[in-house]
Length: 288
Image: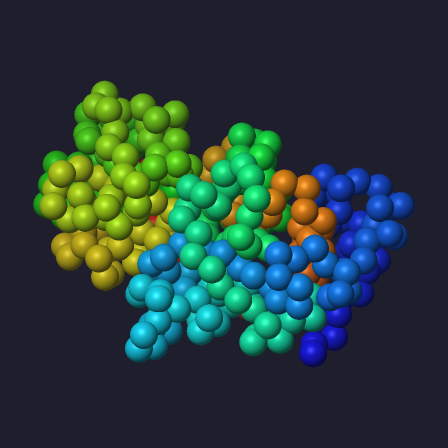
């Protein structure tokens, strides 16, 4: 078993960011493995969507696996690596971490959870935070636009120039919200139950452009849609857009995960994981 993380000033900071509050609460916080609120005692149960796409997950799938594209238990890919690093900080060996399939839209829906936390490129929003608890940020992200090369939209250089086109994104994502609230195209944007459906629509040229987070955009252009390109990334949202792990509303485990993330940021471990898995997926021109 790995050494459990120590509490102190970093714990107080994590508690404040999680909305837990005072130094008194920090002193009372117990992140010992046996004290954690878990859906399955002794096991850290982590949710994510299926398929599990790069660069968030990697390593492929062994024969007979229920997972598509990648099995999250490989520990490869940014989110898989982050989940195991957090688990280690909390005292869980790799074989004590269990992955469960949770569709994206269900991860932040109200109600009982089948997971301790879900990690699936889920952006913090005030509306979502009313019914679930978020960890502090494990990755700050920008949205981006993928288009087919040689199409009319491929020559656009500003957000305003995108307004005449048919854009699309996955249902319930901040990508779709960005289309509706910021780009505000003249055509009703297309929405898809899964990102795979949205990608297929771009490939079939049923939509002119696909909005996704920037690292996912690199995977779309490299693997999923031949002859496509990242037209650009959008300006950073006011206050930034952050991916957070999702917990059942009020689960005290979130505060302990925030302590782990704070320790990983301080030591440089989180940056190292990001450089390993996302270094090639961060650069694109900004559409203004």
